[in-house]
Image (cartoon, rainbow, N blue to C red; front, side, top):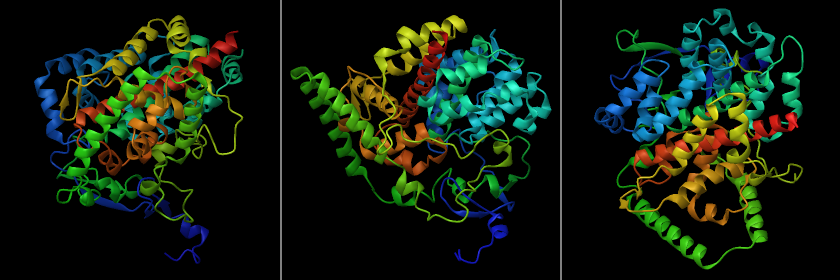
Length: 492
């Protein structure tokens, strides 16, 4: 491409795809055939999800009881691979959105929209635009943030920090929101808002991490729809991904490799358990291992997949559709590593100083009754969920692996557990899995099917969905810990 001769006005006609980094023409419209069946996920074969739904009447009961949309949407279908968890999830989400609480119903859905917009998650935005209108929301607010009441606009800062750098939230942010005045938030209202923001940031991670497809539009005629390239790139056609993954699926690629990868992981788990039984690391050594893992996470970037496109004049024009950008303030603000090179100014959040169990739970429950119990049940459910299997192996204790996944997410957010040996993270999570975890957790909108396919190639899709549930809940808990700690400091 001839960059030298491009004028500012020419550059304004183009955008850069956030996924594949291709330069695209703005406002170009193309016709795309609607596949007759595409399933709820672009990453998981439809038959696997359908089988889970047909055999499980419990899922249908849960949808009737707790779904706010009143139908079996794509998220619920994929989560139904783990029905026990799905019940906890739907009950807590239903409570946040529908049951008695400090915030009026339209506010709840608008806050969900604002949260989803931080990650350009049009799936969740569209869902809650509908819900917002159904619950009596003022249609004009959907024109963008400049049309909403000032007190909702005041959430922009905490929304941005929670989504991307929650460790920056201080008691001053809380004080600013609850200070006296006509646009202030009461503490119960603010806690409700924070729970919603954290929930929808984390749910965006699940949507992108699981390749959740857009809901089918019943009004599409002739099997075609017109779409604008400014919210759609050809790489999205790879939702069914035969193109992008041709190199991964051709021939017998990776079968031998992935089998030995599985056996090697099993062996490492066994060895770590033996070492743990034999030798207790000193507290100093544990601290060193955390610092090492925290610094190493700096170098885990989705580089080969995301930064393959050279910097162009359009770099700052990432594809954000007007539908999404209207709900975002400061769109350039994103995740930045907690342990940035050469910077030591941020103290690590020592988990035992402010834990969910001893501090966060009671505060959130006191200010927004019963939500603490529902969230606690959901966190425990996902953390303890196991079928004692790993791919083809049965009777396996996967506790060590689940803890490594959960704690690695918290490590990237600067949260450290004194009683955890972070050397286990390096032993159990190989690089392609770390790339996937960091992408799904920190910038989920960049997740690709190639990343999803690249780790644990012998594992079942339901096991990978379990990974996504763990990542989602670990992320939500991390955001809540920082926000609730700031509220506690404000109160004291």
